[in-house]
Image 1 (cartoon, rainbow, N blue to C red):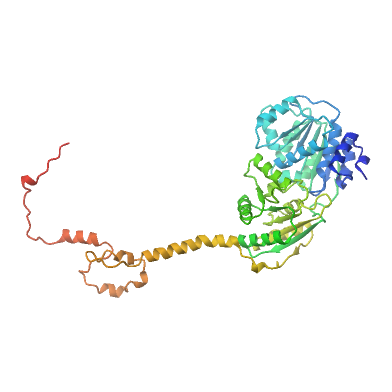
Image 2: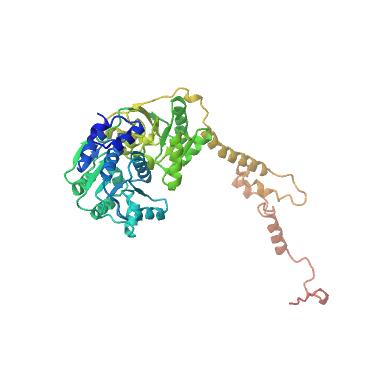
Length: 479
């Protein structure tokens, strides 16, 4: 089957041909014809199957007929993250270059003024994240009464991020008569409930079993001893022994992303990072560097796990086994896309074993173990060396302190002053019984000057002058 068999316009077929695609993927072949027939759709497909084009292509042809009005978008696409929204916008630019359709992107992290100006001109396609859309709607900057087409993409991710209440509210503000397309990798009960409420007689299209992994991806679990330094050492070995053209490395925590990226750069690897603490321009800049090949390794948190379509990712590494089994499917789905093959490694410390078991239960398959790496013992772990430096510095400081605490040479005038420096050397102090036998007149070493003052104050009368002060010794203070 070719794209020409799906009923797309000549202009759209020309744009698709310019990208080099000749045959539709299964989800595209199954979804595009009913979408063109204005049917509601539930599309269940694993990541990397070309699901974005399955709604972008027919939307372009449907929207080619009609005219936009100010502040009233004709269609709405909801995405869970800024990156996914930006990616869908790129798809519209690519496939709609021979159509005169206007588009606006409503995402957080960028200035709202430009987005409002685009809405005031009128747009055919509005691509938005729920938070920014609700914000602008609350400000009265947008009306949804003219929206005849709604796409809810990555619905299960929306559920994970807590967006379902926002989506329900958005749906109530749209016209009751509309076309609704819902796409999700899995269909948990809350998503099924959402579909039953807001979709009308939908056609369900399922091209892969929910929570299944791509058969084109070779998967490995690599057991490690547990320390983060050991994980980094094993990761560098895997990067060195594999034919890694480019790779995405996933971590569970943003702090781990930053630390791992810094470590990889210190070892001379061209790496970048993307996580939720970065503002939107910085995240897009890092993604652009990765797409252009300026960096070949992208260290990411799960903000980048779903939906990012980056061509040619040869490897995915899970530095941490994901806490949620569904995230494993989406993480490794960054490779092996569009019929290509890929490799996915998961580093499994003892704390990760329970997560691995949950992943295997979800996917229904046992992941092969890679027990030993050739030459593992020969590598010097620079991270471990870095860890040793502060400890060695502390030890050197202690040794210097010990030398400074050694007894000084006796001073004839005050032989007892050096005694306080001996106090830390407890092993050299005499036993309690021996201290009890000391003569009472022996001065205390802890505070010799205070003892001398005390001896002076408590000394018996030596016969000195105790009478009134003579006049010639009096001092008058003038204020």
